[in-house]
Image (cartoon, rainbow, N blue to C red; front, side, top):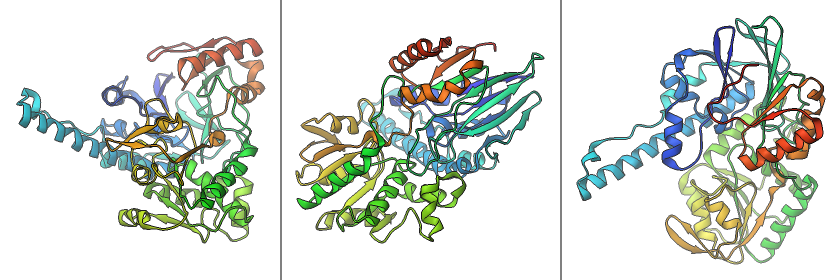
Length: 456
């Protein structure tokens, strides 16, 4: 959520939700650090909730200006923001039940106070009417003195980096916002385009302190885990985010099935949101890479094959518990904090024949982190469960560039860059990346705090 002032108008680069402990996150997400009436327009880099999730809060407080983004991002925001709003509404119901319980049991004076959702499905639906779909490499006038042009960021379907140009001071000033930078050779997503020429750069730093493992090992690791588990008659339970990671896994499994590299076992995608977002992936051939579109060129659906079944109905989800024999189930959430994956883990985590396949970063304090760390017992729905299933990690599919990839990405723009601002990362990652940039390129780096402002 970056505020830009140019030509007497105010703009936002992304408008995401903060994720952390419940009350801290709620305070930050409900108290926007600007007057909503001052915002002229929003430029949205991609659909992930930490970049788009507070757009309904804008409309809740009266915003009705344009939101500029790619066509795929606009279409992905439809199911994502409505799902997020539904979660906000359910969270409010849950918190209000706790408040009234305290009032009835303890007689607390504030028991009559109620919690409102951060936003509702109505606010999310208003956002969808404000999208202005902008194609890549298409400069657009978004303000009296601000132009906007996008480039493929290679992070998610429709994800973009952007360049903003202002002549407010008489001389052109170009600011690049990286959004989230992807990696080369990721499934489905085109490779990120190099950083465009700019005077200043706002750069993400999620993995600024580390190097990823080679992507070439992904298929072999996946095959090995599936074959090994199938031979002992077990199930493969895969926590995966409904947007991005699930589609990557489906495409990989499709390829492995075509190559006869995995056993003939059923594969289930147990996530209504994954079903909806996959429909957007099907529709946007223009935002996919050539390898994925090769399926469509042959008249095949990259995200569907005979042994794969998408499950939406909750009763069909429960029925998986009664199946005999090996199978694969991919379900949300990716960090095992909510959703149907919790039921699959509760029913399978204590069986040593089964495998839990972790496919991405697991934040501190999450159930997914406890599983990766190999805790003997983990809490699921408040009950301690013995972790006896095999745990396999598959981190190579990360959608964020590592330190070396970020340094390569910015290299074409280095001759013209005056300063780089590092965002979207924890301080150790930012400091490591700042040191690497200054050492390799000699460009001054700033690690801003929330609320800092700069004149360019």
